[in-house]
Image (cartoon, helix red, strand yellow):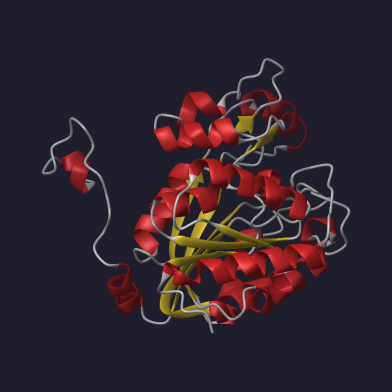
Length: 320
């Protein structure tokens, strides 16, 4: 058993990561899996504009130094990255200081880098060794201790891949079914029909909740997708059911509103043809395994920063 209350296990975790990488071998992909599944699903574009800059995401989210450095470290892939501000909130609000974060869909670097910056030990598992190696290179440039750990492997066997680690927060952004297909690897759940996707997805969630300590939180960022006939599949609802069947109950729900980007242009034709509304949000689902009060005590006092120019006693500050 690895004692995850201490960073003394960093060498062992790196050894696990390297061994898993050797066993997984190289798995080249036409698309970086994480930057699609990890993403704001095409709204926050990094690269791809042909002029060497990082596109519109810079304009919206790079007011802090860590966000700017994360964006600068991303390859010019024309794909999107996970919102670092959402990461920060999830870790500060739902993970104990110096706690351990588990990410079963860990293709992207952002969740690992932000965890490191906030003093949390991050362990991520993903199929693509090629992408994970890129994550490690980015982390080497941006992070100190605790360094994020990425392990190449199938998250259905995540407990074995992580050598029995018990964690303080499960936090991830899974593939939104087949909305984006990230590889031709048959183990990649984005390649599966929805019934098979859901079966494996539930197995992965159950395995992760099995690794989550009692009286702790878990959070997934998910968005709904349509079937071939245009009806929503209810992926958020299926996610809630999977977590609750695994022993973690829904405790909070929030909406992550993404920038409009080209949505007003794209939605016009589909609305005229079939009255389909455009989506500008994703669901942030927070679960608790055990007692929410004890989970809150484990996290400790709320971590937050003062907003410059706003008095702490003002109605804005207290949410009135």
